[in-house]
Length: 139
Image (tube, rainbow, N blue to C red):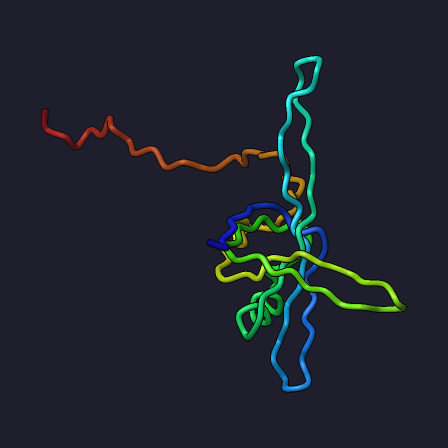
């Protein structure tokens, strides 16, 4: 079985490349943290960078609409693929996740950067108060 599920943050904006046939290939690196207990009892995060690839229009659309920007939190489900090639007489290998499903975990309706809020200042308002001691009331 070849399945992996990861969640993490994008290290940089995703990059879209195209094959000679025009198919979109979207690539990005996902920072995945693992919390480990230290000898002194404290905890520290270890970050692993995982290369991810999305084939087709889905990745192209996500990148074009701003969902694959640096810092975005994502969950990806996919499968592992090992690529090997030779360059300059040396053999190279790369393990990557081919993304089958992706879920954005960042709230895109609000800006990712918190903006400074202006302190609330109450404005005086005139309030209509009816005259309850009207002499025309018969009781």
